[in-house]
Amino acid sequence: MAKEEKPKIKLAVYWGAACGGCCVSVLDVHEKLFDVVAAADLVFWPIALDIKYKDVEAMPDGHIDVTLFNGAVRNSENEHLAKLLRQKTKVLVAYGSCAHMGGIPGLANFTTKDELFKRIYDETESTVNPDKIRPQPEHEVPEGKLKLPEFYNDVRTLDQVVDVDYYLPGCPPQTERLVEVFMAIVSGAELPPKGSVVGALDKAQCDECKRKKSDNKLIKKFYRPWEIQDDGETCFLEQGVICMGPATRGGCGVRCIEGNAPCRGCYGPPPDVPDPGAKMMSAIATMIDADDEEEIAKIVAQIDDPAGTFYRFSLPGSMLRRKLT
Amino acid sequence: MSFEPTIVSFLCNWCSYTGADLAGTSRIKYASNVRIIRVMCSGRIEPTFVIKAFTEGADGVLICGCHPGDCHYHEGNYKCLRRYHLLQKYIQQLGIEKDRLRLEWISASEGKQFAELIDDMTETVRGLGPSKVKEVMTTYT
Image (tube, rainbow over all chains, first blue to last red; front, side):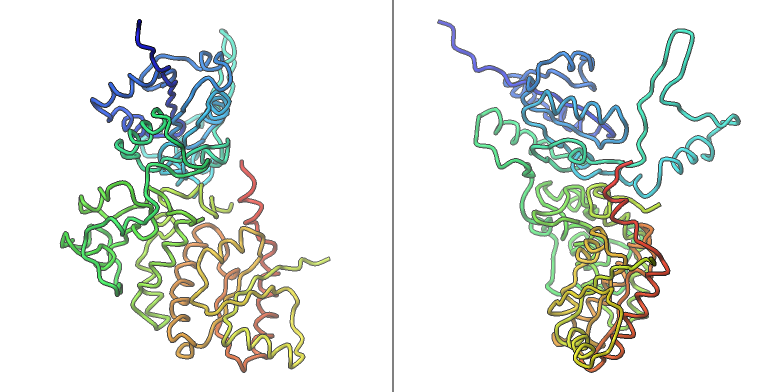
């Protein structure tokens, strides 16, 4: 008698406003891919498989077991697919920093659609556009009507558009964490409560970081990473280099710091922190070694871009999610 | 009717809240636009509190603590001062006018100064008009 096979789970991977790094991180499972393929059928994955949107539309609701949605929601196409995949999926995972908190594309919330278009279609050094042509969502040609997705003013996180079951943070998420989470789902292990951040720790980066730390962090001068010779072993903050470690969830294996680069915060805030940048500002300010108002102002002035530094991966998902206009 | 701003103010328990109390017990009149939240120390005021006040509709945020050197916990007000400078830079990057956030030192005996401060800040914020933060943060475009 043939061995009864456990039904394979149906897996989908989709990218919204993303760089493609998250999809590559899925490919980075290397030979573990055989374990993944043994347990799952990939039913939709634009970067790797030729399956059309209409094929997804034809699936019954809840047909897909797990969707890894990476990338932010930037235009109407991203939003349509987010809603479509939500409808077709049992467990929707916001995969990577962009889907989780907006990520690098989210930095566009420091500007507006109009300013972006002006820069891109009129002003860049390589632009030649004397007729000031701008992309239109619809255009009539003899063959019929051509459509482009509508570009939104705001970059949105996935959970600002649809209900999200889990978050797997990182830019990109560490592939080992993905395999762990995937195997947990396949094995039928009890899943954490809905809305949990999975594949990451509950403690901050500093907890995992092996650099030498003292209890008394005092900063007289902030340095950009290229302005200082890092000694390779002392806490970056104690050397005056901004490191997002104190306000960032661990779980990545402190790879940036092990590679002698300070943490930039891609894993997002630890549990119960509504706003990672605000927490980081709180921590950094405490370390400033001055009591005199003028001196404090001088030291703070050395932080060129607090909003961009402390919200590098999290602007759309933070409390002040865009610039006022 | 003219615009009546809402100002959320965080006052430290030991100096500024007592100063505000003195303004009250001395029956000094001042603008009713301020909503006072007592915290144990100005060093307790996290940037998150200030940001949350703005996102929930405050037109201005006022932080008051003990004068430098007078903090009940020795250095909480210095920590507050450092956070304030960083926060100022941050909110201006996001397009919030700097006069919507203010830090002042009010001692327990400065009831009159507290009343004048509230009147002054109310007028400043009234001049700036309603804050757009809440509307912008809740409307996706």
